[in-house]
Image (cartoon, rainbow, N blue to C red; front, top):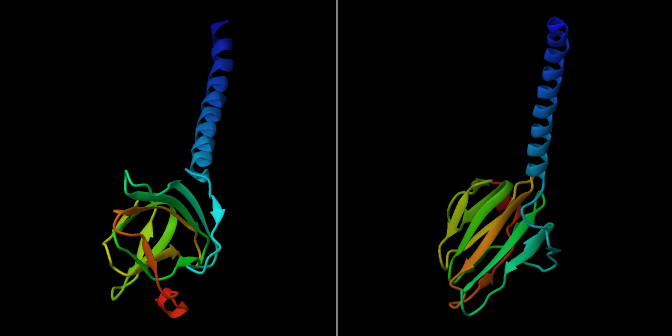
Length: 160
């Protein structure tokens, strides 16, 4: 009688083990595809090329002197050249993007990267031509002033 039980229990345990592993893999995949924050509103101003979305998480106030937004860039989307009087910090939360300071080479930025944009340094950032990118943009020291928007990033500058 005992041999009969082992004969059926071992395959049952194997099936349950496989099912649990597949379920964990599916849960991990689902967690990776869900954004941390919703996309927000489509950006409709002339300071961006391509399609980008903004979800303001913290609007500027006189107590904290920061503004924080989650920005999602579709492939090919990017900011214009700009600078922040009080500096900016970017926390890349999804995808792969590009960042460039005036006079320096373009840098590839990826999920998990932190970029510190110094005060008054012209720069731009956005997605790669083939992959979207989301970052949390933190405008620091907003009591000094916000972003100063400049000319668009040319296709030649973008594709370097």
